[in-house]
Length: 306
Image (cartoon, rainbow, N blue to C red; front, side):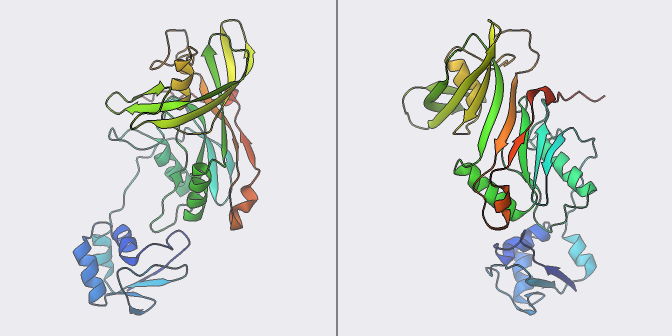
């Protein structure tokens, strides 16, 4: 028999869904059968599949260790060096500096990515111990955009950070080097349409079907007469928003091969350099007002490994 104590990472989900994650090789009929035959109990009483788990609940599996392990697929991550820098870390969140050339999320190619590196990093510190929750990133950056990414270490941090981002309470700032001279602050409020086949977006001035609002603010910092450095803040976080928006007004980002023009930059000069946190409640309210900075001089370029 095995007992599983529910933590705040697992609470709030149905028993059957929790079991499908824990016994991830078992089919649904097996899980329902074990619950019906009382081989799986909740707090030592007969359980219902739809029972919602609470913190400190005990799930009892009256199954042999061999059976449990048979239905548990343990995914092994390809060990690799860690390519990001840690900028801020506590018990709830990890904020890191993502390199140019590293995808944020896993994809079909199986190439290394930020999510897997975070798991390896936390496993090495013995902090990735939840039965079903895995560390998750809360904001994404394009593969060739560098800078700050927030990762949640537990479910509460994930839920609250995602909510704060969705409600636009976490302010995100970028540094960008663009073609041309910009002397005044910009307020760009348009609509964006994504072309899934080409993995590109288009900025349009009027609403149309399937378009989404795109709001971008930019402040010129300095210019050399050919390029201008901008501090950019986005109110909406759309795919390729900054790159497409600046290109649409004739000031593409230097080095942007998709939305820009030919120049001497090998990589697009766009760096997520500052986060101002807000919108947290309860035991995470200490994060409100925290400002996290990673200067563009600290951006990392991922080197190809032999």
